Each structure stands twice: as C-alpha cells, then as structure tokens.
Amino acid sequence: MNEFLIKLLGEEVLKQLVIILSADFEVLLSIYLFNIKGHYKKKWWLWNLITFFSLILLSVPLAYLRSTMSSIRALQGIVHSLYMFGLTSLLLFITYDEGKFQWIQSLCATHATRIFTAKSLGAILNLTGNDVLFTMSFFGSQNIYLDWTIYYAYHIAIYIIFGFIFKMKDNVSLSKKGKRNISILTIFSVLATDFFYCFVTPYESQSLILSGMIKIVCCFMALMILIIRKGIFYSSNQEQEMALMSNLLDKEREQFEKSRENIDIINSKCHDLNHQLSKLEGKITDEELLSLKEATSFYDSTIKTGNDVVDSAIYENQLICQKHNIKLTCMCDGSLLNFMEKTELYSLITNALSNAIKAVENLPDDKRIVDFTLAKKNGIILLEIDNYFDGEIKFSSSNLPISTKTDGKNHGFGSKSISYIVNRYNGTLSYSADNQIFKLLISF
Image (cartoon, rainbow, N blue to C red; front, side, top):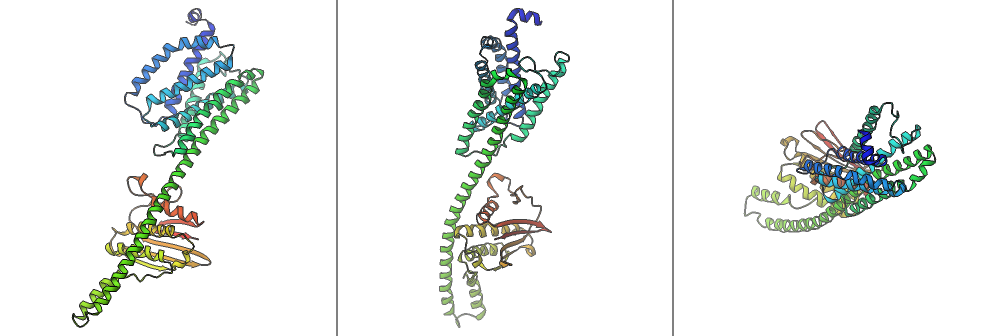
C-alpha cells in the first residue's frame, strides 16, 4: 500500500499528507477534549462530518503545497500554523453554542493548549536523543503501535487536564476591557507561539538540545497565555463586581436620603399628633389615651446611638421587625463608626440587619430575635449581629455565606457589599454558624 502511494504521490508529498492528516486529528482531539463540557449546537455532528470529508479532499492539494515549500521551512510552518488555527476556529464555531467572545476565549485557550502539548512532547523527544524532523517515535521502527499509543495518550491526557484547569465556567462573563484583552491575547498567541517557532525552526538543526530548548520556550509562552487568559477573566470579574457595588451604593445613597426624609416627616407628624392627643385628656378614658400614645410612640424615633446614619438604619429595620413580630435588640455606640462615609455605613448596617431579619422572619416566635451590638473592646471596634437560623448554611471559598436563592448569579450581593465595604476600611469580616445561631462579626 505504501509503495503504491509513493508511486502515486511521491515520497515527499506522502510525507506531507501524513503530517496534514495527523494535524487534522490533533485539532479534532483538542477541540473536543479541551471543551468536553461545552454546549453543543443542534446537528453539530452533521457539520463536523461535512468538514471531515472536506478536509480529506483538501489534504492532497495541501500536501502538494507543503512539498513545494519544503525548501522554505519558515514559510511552510507559517502556512501550516494558519491552517491549523483556521481549522480550530471553524470547528469551534460549528460545534459549540457560544457567544462571540466566549468563542474567542475558547479559541485562545484551545490553541495555546495544543501548542503546549505538541511542543512539550517534541521537547521530550529531542532531549532523549530523537530528531522530530524525521520521527515522532521513541522506539524508531521497533514498535510503531506503542509509539502511536504513547503519542495520542499524551495528547489526550494533556487536553483533558488543561481543560479541567483552564476551561472557564459558563457563568463567567467579560467586561468590555476583558473582551478587548482576550481578543488581543488570541492574536498574540499565534504570533508568540506559532510564528516565533516558525522563524527559529532553521536553528533547530544545529543540535537536538537547542531544538528541545526552543520547544520549551514555546511551551512556556503557551502556558503563560493560558495563565494570562485566566487572569483576564479574574480581573474582569472583579471589575464588574466593583461596578456593581458602585451602582448598589448609588442606589442605597438615594434610599438613605429618602429614608432620612421619611423618618423626619414621621417624627414631625408623631410629635404633632402627641400634642393633639394631650388635648384629649379628660375627653376620653385614660386607657384609650394611653393606647393611642403607645401606638404613636413606636413611630416617634427615639433611637440615639451617636450616629444619625446608624439611627436611621436601625429605625428603618425596626419597622420591618414590627411587621414580622421580630424582636430587635440594640446596644450600639454609633459614634464609633463616625469615620465611615455615610452611604457606605448605611449600606453596611442595612444589609447586615436585612440578612438577619430574612433569616428569622419564618422561624417560631421564640426564635425571631436579632441582636445588634456595636462596642469597643481593647481598642478594637466590634460590630456583631446574631440571629437564629433554620437549615444549613454553606460558605463560599472566600468564607461568604452562599445565597439560598435558586438564581445565585443575581443574589448574594448583600454579603458581597458588606465584604467590599469592610475591606475598604481595612476591617476584618467573619461569619460563623453553630448551634442554629448565625454570627456576623466585623472588627476595625
């Protein structure tokens, strides 16, 4: 069979044909194994089948094209690299149901992983005395089946391991800056790995050690591209969370101003009403008068902690507690937090109390209790909120309580907002959940 193909195509063309078919198979492996958990498009297999047969038809003319470039190895390598990069792009596009930038970041990672895999195996062969220009075998012609088994087992293992480490989760999104950086990194990945390798290829023939070192440099660049890509996602996620926190604080600033206006209006009305009630003495029974005064006294804010922001936040949550028959106890020296910006302080207290109130509002009456303490001990300002809870509380890797809402992407920002504000003032935030008592502790 080999002799027939050599006579039909020529030895050099046949060699290039094997290289192309092997490269096609490597692309297919990298696409499906690195992105093994991707969301597939409808009838993706049909389009892949059409592409597969198209590649077979294209292989022979491509082999002839490569053979004509055999004397210009750098150009041959560039054309081959562009072919593999284009094929990777096409297969990712027709196989996976992804948005534009999700597709670009998958392309960036898949390409870098394939470069790392190919060059690392080539480096191992070079450093063990094998010239990859003539063979990709550890055993020469002694055991070709074992060689192919090692070759593809190595590729499969790296693709799966790197896919597990570097494949981004579906719920990770990119900011505008992140999308731009990923696009630049994808272009750079081709220039920094493929084109670099193509231009230094002529120097590989000088020695196997030099050839191995060049491939190691390519591996290092591919690995750095994967790490930088992961860093872009992390920083993009941080930027978006910061922007979201900023928007939340803006909304809470408006809420704080409205709350203060409402409290002032309520206090004014209650004060006037108390004066009117005093005129009813002697006209109604003492019991009726006392009942009316008690009804209005609750809304007449007498909370004085030494900080009007803390007063407003407590008063607002007291109204919510009354509605749900929750006992809110406070022992607070609000003046201890005078160093904080008013909106951030309001957000901190409101979110912390709101989380505690939500936790107890459906519990039995004897457990509908929220304790709020703000004091200074041994030179440290301690803010503590304790409440009962039912069920199980899980914590994230950053030790924040995980939202019990089914839509986790759109909830849990109360705890994140608290953490963000505490960090801004170099404070320490901790949570604990023992014996059905949940504790939030902040120290400054």
